[in-house]
Amino acid sequence: MSSIQEEYETLPYPHYVHPLSDPARSAVLGRLFGLRPADPRQARVVELGCGSGSNLLTLAARFPGSRFLGLDFSGPDIAAAREVAAEAGLINVEFQQADLLTWTPPGQRFDYVIAYGLFSWVPDEVKARALELARACLAPPGIACFSYMTYPGCKQPEALRDLLRLRTEGLANAAEKLAAAQAVLGFLDGAYGAQKDRPQSASLHAEVRRIRSKEPAFLLHDDLGGRRDPCYLLQFTGWAAEHGLQYLADSELHTMLVENLPLESARALLALKLDRLETEQFLDYVTNRSFRCSLLVGAEAAVSGQLNAAALHELCFAPVLRPAVPGKPGDGEAQFQMADGVTVMVRSVALVAFLRALCAWPDGFTPFADVLAMAQSATGRPFTEGERAQLDEDLLTLYGRRQLELSAVPLMPPLHVPERPQLTPLNRVLARQRGMLVSAHQRSQRLAEPERRLCGLLDGTRTLAQLRATPEATALGGPLEPFMAGLTRTGCLS
Ligand SMILES: C[S@@+](CC[C@H](N)C(=O)[O-])C[C@H]1O[C@@H](n2cnc3c(N)ncnc32)[C@H](O)[C@@H]1O
Image (cartoon, rainbow, N blue to C red):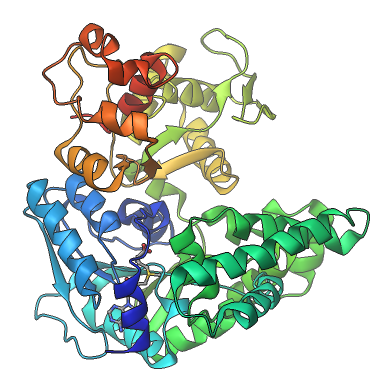
């Protein structure tokens, strides 16, 4: 058994769900860059290093028409993943205990490969093998999603990690390591905090506080664990190329766009006449980026250099902007607001109507054609060809600024809390076994103990009024309604 396998078997990695690895998101980027990836509702997906499977289990529950395979060499993690799948009645997901170095892909290939939280935490031969497997597993035009730690943002945390490891490396067990690490972090927190006026202290202080607040198992694996190898984007894409894979996109489009820089900086960067990958590498310096989630496709795939606005017509939309003030149909100008209160002025009849229509399903993803129909009906006329073309461009711009969200799959969570709330089968098991819930948006939520106990009652047998009268609801320490509304909005209920 390798030391890394022993590390994960002794202390399982915390349960996480990764929205950036969602095939419904990868498919958006694939389509915007000119490919036609498989519909995530009818796809084959493999996850390399799936841990205890929370990510894959969530996908399997969301997409019952797809098939999922999870691989990990940690026996306890695979056993835990299998147990949840069986209890939740998920028959479209399989978990195999396997070492990636020796596992051979089955004959039938996959539409999506996920390697999240793997690449930077394994030896170089496993990194190479993961890329080799991604290439071998992908059926064109399949997409592989790799997350990894990056430079330049990891340079400073690396120095902190060196000090933590210096103090913890020889210690015998997890409890001793954690205590020694917290002592180092406590010292640094105080020392940087006491020198707030020194410019370099602020960012170091923030980093120390971030590490200090991590869950113990996360701190042990990510900061004190045996391996953590950040790399530059250009190194990663170079290795991918050696394995017959090309860079498709970042899973967050806004991070790729020069337009999101202040105007003068954008002009200066464009003047350097860099290629696409070099430009993104420079952007990593501007943001001091420390983490990436990159999408890869086969070297032969015809990735477009331009974003394809027409692809929007096949995608589903969720609002980020909300109307700042009520308006009237046909308005050619309106103010919208981000969640943080920042206002955005929109000047176009079609876009104003489209964004307002989108808010009819605030937590869902609505197909383009439906939003367009609602927008035109509210305006009282069809949009002209010119308006439609401009609308596509405007929507693409908003997506590139994170002012709307896209998915390849529609989602319509109920607008009102059901009379007899019932968690989805997977959430019933996860709440009980792991103290967490997972959403239809591929996100997870940790439950405080009173919430977890209340979740045990959400089996569809009790009305809201009956739930309100239970000791479990009283123990929440606040009204039941906001908690239930949250579960409804996020699609945690059946
Ligand atoms: C940092 S954890 C991430 C787990 C999960 N993907 C997540 O993000 O929550 C890395 C996982 O990779 C697995 N792993 C590392 N090397 C492996 C190998 N050679 N073969 C199979 N699994 C491996 C570990 O057991 C561990 O579960």
